[in-house]
Image (cartoon, rainbow, N blue to C red; front, side, top):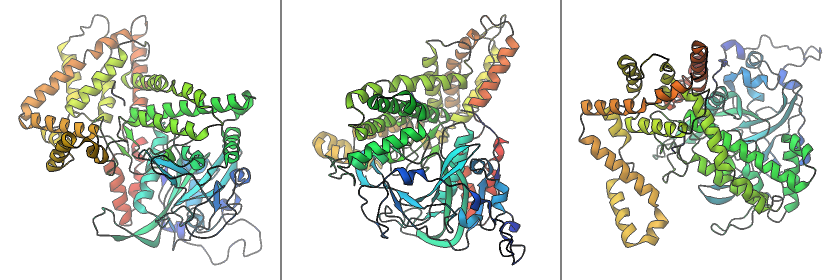
Length: 616
């Protein structure tokens, strides 16, 4: 089965006006002795439980270092020069009990939400974690640019950890400078909020702040670096703990030789599990007095949430791009937006990360990679989580993923009243048709709601209805030139020939520098490109029409939705409504984000705000 909604809703992202940064006078309320707080951000109720319940690095020595026996290190965010808002998210800031417009017009807002000024009660810190990156254990990683500000208690909305990303050096910055630029900050801000309004569990982004501080970046790794503005995104989540948080105890890896900085400190692992389960899985803490059973129930819940999450990614055409264990949330939410991408034309081999040469983190690989990461989490939790019990839990993963995936896909196809054995094949056939024709993933699903269920007395082969449905699908198919471009091998022909020869003559060396799956993908592309070179646009359209008609046996399945239903019109209306919610009209395509970035780099922040307009 080829693996691949959610709900849209209104979003408000505000653009600051000039008045947002203009002080109305040189004398404020505090200066007059009235004792009135100048900023709503100064009234946030911080209760930084993580720093109280988890080991804290006793050293405050500046600079990069190995941090042993600790989960957090205190840090001092580095102030920006002339920080100012790009945009804020009203809905995300409301989680903290804040009014977005009030924050936007707060003269101290950009300072507080960039880490340039520390809010009362905030305790800046950086989290220590490890990770498997591209399948290899990397040792200590940690928050190299992110900075924990604390946990905010909100009576109506619970407890939220807030972070600023791009606030400067930490002990975990490695060779980097701890800064982020406008490009990456806008991408994270937009996608965090877009995913939320698509109904996909995610960390949130409350604001983007830019500044006159600059760093040097080589955008295209071309040897032509340029100065870019330092920018900071405010991130919000119940916690930013991740799979890699538990890998700090790992013994020396048999392949890389690296080990976790807290290897041998098993008591901290138990302490971390107690904290995570008590704080974020209280029902499990209450319902399982036996420690082992509690830990197994916790792992099963993390597994279930992860399976549900990746099923939702597949159903909106989202590719994370860097599914290392350090980018997997312990809460089962989307975490860390780097080289992500939403598919345009459906391609199961879609890769959004230019450095992912092997396709490890391709679109269709995501369910399997998430399973692999869960196995690594299970290893990291042992012996608190017995390996045999973890293995039994992991045996449930594939069935759970498929169940969540099919539930979502049935909604996308408007199959609401019945669950038929043929549905899985139907989905696979549609995706294969989309792949063959280069159909747009988002728009194709959106258009399917216009194909109605055949009613009694209506011929399923009715030519007008069939033509209308076919035309709807054909509108989303790629042109001949688009398909040629999409199927052009990414590997130089000479390199491919060399690797093919090496695979025959020196298999051991071939395994060191490439892999069979990569070569097969390149050869498949070459084969498809060869066929396309021998095809005319007219021949291609005829073939696409045949593919579309072949899939339209789907309407026969739709007829089953009306069996036993007295109010056919109500069923049709419900189907269109559910499909409208499950199939977004707009996703954050790369060009949308890029247009917003380019405008912002030229001082026009309106595109960042306007991204949300399609949802209104």
